[in-house]
Length: 41
Picture (cartoon, one colour):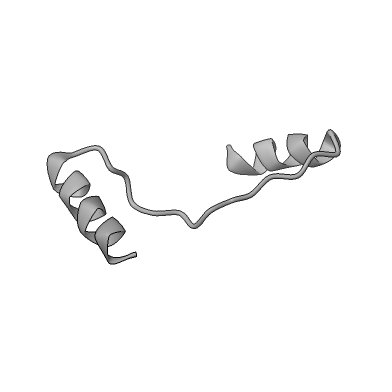
């Protein structure tokens, strides 16, 4: 899916930024992990 989106963006002459991919944050323990990582930044 992302590759198709990137191709469309390029075809339109646009630029986009792609931040690093992280794990899904869809469970309470994921949210806790995210808070710990974000606090360390």
